Length: 81
Image (cartoon, rainbow, N blue to C red):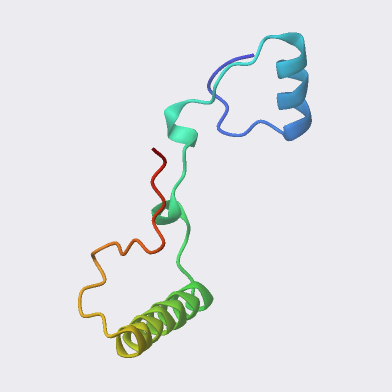
């Protein structure tokens, strides 16, 4: 197998693993969210998600009385001795 392919079908990948000739994909094949194309729908979904997360965070601060969400609160901590 040449290591220049950016995509290997799942069936071929399984055959490689079974035959012991599995070769990892090149680093260029590791995609992230920034590599995906932006569309009107993706922008809308991202905006709605961000707004909802900020709303939830504000509600959590009100209910719990927490001003600093960066701190981790440990409750019912059990220490084995």
